[in-house]
Amino acid sequence: MTGRRTEVLVVGGGQAGLAAGYYLRRAGLDFRILDAAPAPGGAWRHHWDTLRLFSPAAHSSLPGRPMPRQPGHDQPDAAHTAAYLAEYEQRYELPVLRPVRVERVERVEHVERPDGGGLLSARTDSGDWHARALIMATGSRRRPFVPAVPGLRDFTGRQLHSRDYRSAADFAGQRVLVVGGGNSGAQIAADLTGTAAVRWVTRRPPRFLPDEVDGRALFDLASRHVRGDGPRLGDLGDLVAVPPVRAARDAGRLTAHPMFHRLDAGGAVWEDDERWPCDAIVWCTGFRPDLGPLRGLGLRDRTGRVPTDGTRVLADPRIHLLGYGDWTGPASATLTGVGRTARTAVDQLAATLRRTA
Image 1: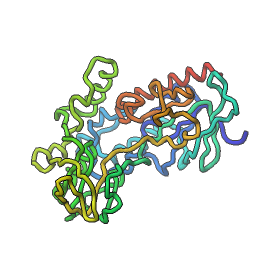
Image 2: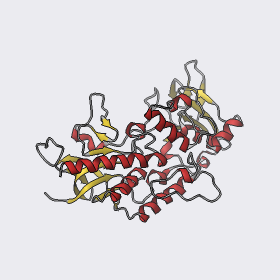
Image 3: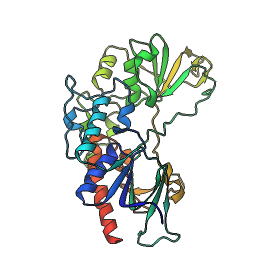
Image 4: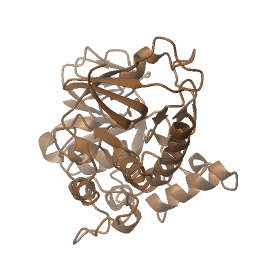
Protein backbone atom coordinates (compact mmCIF):
# COMPACT_ATOMS: atom_id res chain seq x y z
CA MET A 1 0.00 0.00 0.00
CA THR A 2 1.61 3.25 -1.16
CA GLY A 3 0.94 6.73 0.17
CA ARG A 4 1.45 8.62 3.40
CA ARG A 5 -0.28 7.66 6.62
CA THR A 6 -1.69 9.38 9.68
CA GLU A 7 -4.28 8.56 12.33
CA VAL A 8 -6.79 11.25 11.37
CA LEU A 9 -7.26 13.24 8.17
CA VAL A 10 -9.16 16.52 8.24
CA VAL A 11 -10.41 17.64 4.83
CA GLY A 12 -10.75 21.43 4.78
CA GLY A 13 -8.62 24.10 6.45
CA GLY A 14 -11.24 26.75 7.23
CA GLN A 15 -12.73 27.50 10.63
CA ALA A 16 -14.19 24.01 11.14
CA GLY A 17 -10.98 22.27 10.15
CA LEU A 18 -8.89 24.47 12.43
CA ALA A 19 -11.23 23.89 15.39
CA ALA A 20 -10.93 20.15 14.78
CA GLY A 21 -7.15 20.50 14.63
CA TYR A 22 -7.08 22.29 17.97
CA TYR A 23 -8.87 19.43 19.73
CA LEU A 24 -7.00 16.71 17.83
CA ARG A 25 -3.74 18.24 19.06
CA ARG A 26 -5.06 18.31 22.62
CA ALA A 27 -6.13 14.66 22.31
CA GLY A 28 -2.58 13.67 21.31
CA LEU A 29 -3.63 12.22 17.97
CA ASP A 30 -1.48 12.25 14.86
CA PHE A 31 -3.32 14.18 12.15
CA ARG A 32 -3.01 16.25 9.00
CA ILE A 33 -5.32 18.93 7.57
CA LEU A 34 -5.64 18.94 3.77
CA ASP A 35 -6.84 22.26 2.37
CA ALA A 36 -7.61 22.94 -1.28
CA ALA A 37 -7.09 26.71 -0.94
CA PRO A 38 -3.71 28.26 -1.74
CA ALA A 39 -3.70 30.37 1.45
CA PRO A 40 -5.20 30.31 4.96
CA GLY A 41 -8.42 32.08 5.90
CA GLY A 42 -11.06 29.69 4.57
CA ALA A 43 -14.14 31.14 2.89
CA TRP A 44 -13.58 34.47 4.65
CA ARG A 45 -10.94 35.33 2.03
CA HIS A 46 -13.68 35.56 -0.60
CA HIS A 47 -16.53 37.54 0.99
CA TRP A 48 -17.65 40.98 -0.13
CA ASP A 49 -15.85 44.08 1.10
CA THR A 50 -18.49 45.42 3.49
CA LEU A 51 -19.54 42.14 5.12
CA ARG A 52 -19.59 42.28 8.91
CA LEU A 53 -19.78 39.48 11.45
CA PHE A 54 -22.95 39.21 13.50
CA SER A 55 -21.02 39.59 16.77
CA PRO A 56 -18.12 41.56 18.25
CA ALA A 57 -14.70 39.93 17.98
CA ALA A 58 -14.77 38.64 21.57
CA HIS A 59 -17.81 36.51 20.72
CA SER A 60 -16.56 35.32 17.31
CA SER A 61 -13.63 33.17 18.34
CA LEU A 62 -12.35 29.65 17.83
CA PRO A 63 -11.40 27.57 20.89
CA GLY A 64 -8.36 28.69 22.82
CA ARG A 65 -7.68 31.98 21.09
CA PRO A 66 -9.98 35.05 21.29
CA MET A 67 -10.25 37.05 18.10
CA PRO A 68 -8.57 40.44 18.59
CA ARG A 69 -10.72 43.52 18.18
CA GLN A 70 -10.59 45.26 14.80
CA PRO A 71 -9.72 48.91 15.38
CA GLY A 72 -12.58 51.22 14.54
CA HIS A 73 -15.18 48.47 14.19
CA ASP A 74 -17.44 46.83 16.75
CA GLN A 75 -18.06 43.92 14.38
CA PRO A 76 -15.06 42.65 12.38
CA ASP A 77 -15.06 42.40 8.60
CA ALA A 78 -14.17 39.40 6.46
CA ALA A 79 -10.53 40.42 5.91
CA HIS A 80 -9.95 40.73 9.67
CA THR A 81 -11.55 37.31 10.19
CA ALA A 82 -9.37 35.69 7.51
CA ALA A 83 -6.26 37.18 9.12
CA TYR A 84 -7.37 35.80 12.50
CA LEU A 85 -7.71 32.29 11.05
CA ALA A 86 -4.23 32.53 9.52
CA GLU A 87 -2.78 33.61 12.87
CA TYR A 88 -4.69 30.87 14.69
CA GLU A 89 -3.29 28.22 12.37
CA GLN A 90 0.24 29.48 12.96
CA ARG A 91 -0.14 29.94 16.72
CA TYR A 92 -1.12 26.31 17.29
CA GLU A 93 1.27 24.99 14.62
CA LEU A 94 -1.52 23.06 12.99
CA PRO A 95 -0.25 20.72 10.24
CA VAL A 96 -2.11 22.17 7.27
CA LEU A 97 -1.00 21.05 3.83
CA ARG A 98 -2.07 23.25 0.91
CA PRO A 99 -3.03 23.45 -1.80
CA VAL A 100 -4.15 19.81 -1.70
CA ARG A 101 -7.47 18.89 -3.27
CA VAL A 102 -9.07 15.65 -2.10
CA GLU A 103 -10.71 14.01 -5.10
CA ARG A 104 -12.29 10.95 -3.47
CA VAL A 105 -12.24 8.88 -0.32
CA GLU A 106 -12.16 5.08 -0.52
CA ARG A 107 -12.11 2.15 1.87
CA VAL A 108 -8.86 0.26 1.62
CA GLU A 109 -10.30 -3.13 2.59
CA HIS A 110 -12.32 -5.20 0.15
CA VAL A 111 -14.38 -6.47 3.09
CA GLU A 112 -15.08 -4.05 5.92
CA ARG A 113 -14.41 -5.10 9.50
CA PRO A 114 -17.64 -5.17 11.53
CA ASP A 115 -16.10 -3.02 14.27
CA GLY A 116 -15.47 -0.17 11.83
CA GLY A 117 -11.71 -0.67 11.84
CA GLY A 118 -9.32 -0.57 8.92
CA LEU A 119 -8.11 2.34 6.83
CA LEU A 120 -9.64 5.04 4.67
CA SER A 121 -7.74 6.29 1.65
CA ALA A 122 -7.93 9.88 0.44
CA ARG A 123 -6.96 10.25 -3.22
CA THR A 124 -5.62 13.77 -3.78
CA ASP A 125 -4.04 15.75 -6.58
CA SER A 126 -0.69 15.41 -4.81
CA GLY A 127 -0.71 11.75 -3.79
CA ASP A 128 -2.61 9.39 -1.53
CA TRP A 129 -3.16 9.59 2.22
CA HIS A 130 -4.29 6.75 4.46
CA ALA A 131 -5.94 7.27 7.82
CA ARG A 132 -7.93 5.43 10.46
CA ALA A 133 -10.50 8.23 10.65
CA LEU A 134 -11.64 11.23 8.65
CA ILE A 135 -13.24 14.59 9.47
CA MET A 136 -14.92 16.32 6.55
CA ALA A 137 -14.83 20.09 7.12
CA THR A 138 -15.13 21.36 3.55
CA GLY A 139 -18.05 23.72 4.13
CA SER A 140 -20.22 24.58 1.16
CA ARG A 141 -18.57 27.45 -0.73
CA ARG A 142 -17.79 25.30 -3.76
CA ARG A 143 -21.47 24.31 -4.15
CA PRO A 144 -23.52 27.48 -4.61
CA PHE A 145 -27.21 26.90 -5.21
CA VAL A 146 -29.30 28.75 -7.79
CA PRO A 147 -32.97 27.73 -8.16
CA ALA A 148 -34.19 26.53 -11.54
CA VAL A 149 -36.58 29.42 -12.17
CA PRO A 150 -38.30 29.65 -15.57
CA GLY A 151 -36.31 31.73 -18.03
CA LEU A 152 -33.04 31.45 -16.12
CA ARG A 153 -31.06 30.96 -19.33
CA ASP A 154 -33.02 33.57 -21.24
CA PHE A 155 -31.81 36.51 -19.16
CA THR A 156 -29.04 38.32 -21.07
CA GLY A 157 -27.68 40.43 -18.21
CA ARG A 158 -25.06 39.53 -15.68
CA GLN A 159 -25.79 36.77 -13.15
CA LEU A 160 -23.66 35.95 -10.13
CA HIS A 161 -24.01 34.16 -6.82
CA SER A 162 -23.45 35.90 -3.51
CA ARG A 163 -20.13 34.04 -3.16
CA ASP A 164 -18.81 36.06 -6.13
CA TYR A 165 -20.16 39.46 -5.05
CA ARG A 166 -17.39 41.88 -4.02
CA SER A 167 -18.44 45.52 -4.07
CA ALA A 168 -21.37 47.79 -4.82
CA ALA A 169 -19.02 49.86 -6.96
CA ASP A 170 -19.10 47.08 -9.57
CA PHE A 171 -22.78 47.91 -10.16
CA ALA A 172 -22.76 51.71 -10.03
CA GLY A 173 -25.70 53.18 -11.92
CA GLN A 174 -27.18 49.77 -12.78
CA ARG A 175 -30.47 48.11 -11.96
CA VAL A 176 -29.80 45.06 -9.78
CA LEU A 177 -32.19 42.31 -8.70
CA VAL A 178 -31.14 40.71 -5.38
CA VAL A 179 -32.78 37.32 -4.83
CA GLY A 180 -32.95 35.67 -1.42
CA GLY A 181 -34.45 36.33 1.98
CA GLY A 182 -31.51 35.30 4.14
CA ASN A 183 -28.81 37.39 5.76
CA SER A 184 -26.65 37.55 2.63
CA GLY A 185 -29.60 38.86 0.61
CA ALA A 186 -30.37 41.55 3.17
CA GLN A 187 -26.73 42.61 3.52
CA ILE A 188 -26.01 42.75 -0.21
CA ALA A 189 -29.26 44.60 -0.96
CA ALA A 190 -28.40 47.11 1.78
CA ASP A 191 -24.86 47.45 0.43
CA LEU A 192 -26.11 48.25 -3.07
CA THR A 193 -28.60 50.94 -2.04
CA GLY A 194 -27.29 54.37 -2.90
CA THR A 195 -25.02 52.98 -5.63
CA ALA A 196 -27.49 51.06 -7.78
CA ALA A 197 -31.24 50.81 -8.26
CA VAL A 198 -32.10 47.72 -6.23
CA ARG A 199 -35.08 45.44 -6.02
CA TRP A 200 -34.84 42.82 -3.27
CA VAL A 201 -37.10 39.78 -3.78
CA THR A 202 -37.86 37.02 -1.28
CA ARG A 203 -40.11 33.96 -1.26
CA ARG A 204 -41.74 35.10 1.96
CA PRO A 205 -41.73 38.40 3.87
CA PRO A 206 -38.42 38.81 5.73
CA ARG A 207 -38.54 38.69 9.51
CA PHE A 208 -35.88 40.62 11.37
CA LEU A 209 -34.71 39.34 14.72
CA PRO A 210 -34.78 41.88 17.56
CA ASP A 211 -32.03 44.44 17.03
CA GLU A 212 -30.19 43.35 20.18
CA VAL A 213 -29.75 39.78 18.89
CA ASP A 214 -26.20 39.11 17.69
CA GLY A 215 -24.18 36.01 16.90
CA ARG A 216 -23.62 35.03 20.52
CA ALA A 217 -27.34 35.23 21.21
CA LEU A 218 -28.02 33.13 18.10
CA PHE A 219 -25.67 30.42 19.35
CA ASP A 220 -27.21 30.44 22.82
CA LEU A 221 -30.73 30.22 21.38
CA ALA A 222 -29.79 27.35 19.07
CA SER A 223 -28.14 25.47 21.94
CA ARG A 224 -31.14 25.96 24.23
CA HIS A 225 -33.50 24.65 21.57
CA VAL A 226 -31.42 21.50 21.12
CA ARG A 227 -31.54 20.95 24.90
CA GLY A 228 -35.31 21.36 24.76
CA ASP A 229 -35.55 24.46 26.96
CA GLY A 230 -35.86 27.26 24.44
CA PRO A 231 -37.75 28.36 21.32
CA ARG A 232 -36.71 27.39 17.84
CA LEU A 233 -34.68 30.26 16.39
CA GLY A 234 -36.92 30.44 13.35
CA ASP A 235 -39.86 31.25 15.62
CA LEU A 236 -38.22 34.56 16.51
CA GLY A 237 -37.08 35.67 13.06
CA ASP A 238 -34.66 35.01 10.24
CA LEU A 239 -32.43 38.05 9.76
CA VAL A 240 -29.81 39.63 12.00
CA ALA A 241 -30.07 43.42 11.82
CA VAL A 242 -26.36 44.24 11.56
CA PRO A 243 -25.79 48.03 11.49
CA PRO A 244 -25.73 48.53 7.67
CA VAL A 245 -28.92 46.48 7.27
CA ARG A 246 -30.60 48.26 10.15
CA ALA A 247 -29.68 51.66 8.70
CA ALA A 248 -31.04 50.78 5.25
CA ARG A 249 -34.19 49.26 6.72
CA ASP A 250 -34.91 52.20 9.02
CA ALA A 251 -34.33 54.67 6.17
CA GLY A 252 -36.90 52.84 4.01
CA ARG A 253 -34.32 51.71 1.45
CA LEU A 254 -34.63 48.00 2.21
CA THR A 255 -38.06 46.78 1.19
CA ALA A 256 -38.67 43.20 0.13
CA HIS A 257 -40.83 42.35 -2.89
CA PRO A 258 -42.50 38.99 -3.61
CA MET A 259 -40.62 36.47 -5.69
CA PHE A 260 -41.03 36.89 -9.44
CA HIS A 261 -42.65 34.25 -11.62
CA ARG A 262 -40.06 34.04 -14.42
CA LEU A 263 -37.18 35.77 -16.14
CA ASP A 264 -36.99 36.98 -19.72
CA ALA A 265 -34.13 38.47 -21.69
CA GLY A 266 -34.30 41.83 -19.98
CA GLY A 267 -35.43 41.21 -16.41
CA ALA A 268 -37.99 39.71 -14.04
CA VAL A 269 -41.70 39.15 -14.67
CA TRP A 270 -44.35 38.58 -12.00
CA GLU A 271 -47.59 36.58 -12.32
CA ASP A 272 -49.63 39.76 -12.87
CA ASP A 273 -47.29 40.60 -15.79
CA GLU A 274 -45.52 43.34 -13.86
CA ARG A 275 -42.01 43.56 -15.28
CA TRP A 276 -38.81 44.99 -13.77
CA PRO A 277 -35.95 45.41 -16.26
CA CYS A 278 -32.50 44.94 -14.76
CA ASP A 279 -28.84 44.75 -15.70
CA ALA A 280 -27.77 42.12 -13.16
CA ILE A 281 -29.06 39.48 -10.77
CA VAL A 282 -27.31 38.54 -7.52
CA TRP A 283 -28.46 35.11 -6.32
CA CYS A 284 -28.33 35.00 -2.51
CA THR A 285 -29.88 31.55 -2.44
CA GLY A 286 -27.51 29.53 -0.30
CA PHE A 287 -25.20 26.59 -0.71
CA ARG A 288 -25.14 22.82 -0.49
CA PRO A 289 -22.64 20.77 1.60
CA ASP A 290 -19.48 19.98 -0.35
CA LEU A 291 -19.29 16.23 0.24
CA GLY A 292 -18.25 15.16 -3.25
CA PRO A 293 -15.17 13.15 -2.16
CA LEU A 294 -17.44 10.80 -0.16
CA ARG A 295 -19.74 9.96 -3.05
CA GLY A 296 -18.37 6.44 -3.64
CA LEU A 297 -18.79 5.20 -0.07
CA GLY A 298 -22.54 4.56 -0.11
CA LEU A 299 -23.26 6.80 2.87
CA ARG A 300 -26.48 8.42 1.62
CA ASP A 301 -30.00 7.24 2.33
CA ARG A 302 -32.91 7.11 -0.12
CA THR A 303 -33.46 10.86 0.19
CA GLY A 304 -29.86 11.59 -0.82
CA ARG A 305 -28.87 12.78 2.65
CA VAL A 306 -26.02 11.36 4.75
CA PRO A 307 -27.63 10.23 8.04
CA THR A 308 -25.61 11.25 11.10
CA ASP A 309 -25.72 11.08 14.86
CA GLY A 310 -24.45 14.58 15.59
CA THR A 311 -21.33 14.71 13.44
CA ARG A 312 -20.78 10.95 13.23
CA VAL A 313 -21.81 9.24 9.99
CA LEU A 314 -24.08 6.33 10.84
CA ALA A 315 -22.92 4.17 7.92
CA ASP A 316 -19.25 4.54 8.90
CA PRO A 317 -18.38 5.79 12.42
CA ARG A 318 -14.82 6.56 11.32
CA ILE A 319 -16.15 9.56 9.38
CA HIS A 320 -17.40 12.79 10.96
CA LEU A 321 -18.99 15.80 9.23
CA LEU A 322 -18.14 19.10 10.90
CA GLY A 323 -19.34 22.63 10.31
CA TYR A 324 -22.34 22.11 8.03
CA GLY A 325 -24.85 24.05 10.12
CA ASP A 326 -27.47 22.75 12.53
CA TRP A 327 -27.49 19.42 10.70
CA THR A 328 -24.10 18.62 12.28
CA GLY A 329 -24.37 20.66 15.49
CA PRO A 330 -26.10 23.83 16.74
CA ALA A 331 -24.63 26.84 14.90
CA SER A 332 -21.71 24.67 13.74
CA ALA A 333 -21.27 26.77 10.59
CA THR A 334 -20.31 29.77 12.75
CA LEU A 335 -17.07 30.77 14.43
CA THR A 336 -18.79 30.85 17.80
CA GLY A 337 -20.56 27.53 17.42
CA VAL A 338 -18.06 25.25 15.69
CA GLY A 339 -15.73 24.83 18.68
CA ARG A 340 -18.21 22.98 20.87
CA THR A 341 -19.17 20.65 18.03
CA ALA A 342 -15.51 20.03 17.13
CA ARG A 343 -14.71 19.04 20.69
CA THR A 344 -17.54 16.51 20.80
CA ALA A 345 -16.58 15.11 17.39
CA VAL A 346 -12.95 14.61 18.42
CA ASP A 347 -13.96 12.98 21.71
CA GLN A 348 -16.17 10.51 19.87
CA LEU A 349 -13.60 9.89 17.19
CA ALA A 350 -10.85 9.23 19.76
CA ALA A 351 -13.12 6.72 21.49
CA THR A 352 -13.75 4.95 18.17
CA LEU A 353 -10.02 4.75 17.48
CA ARG A 354 -9.36 3.27 20.91
CA ARG A 355 -11.98 0.59 20.35
CA THR A 356 -10.62 -0.37 16.93
CA ALA A 357 -6.90 -0.18 17.74
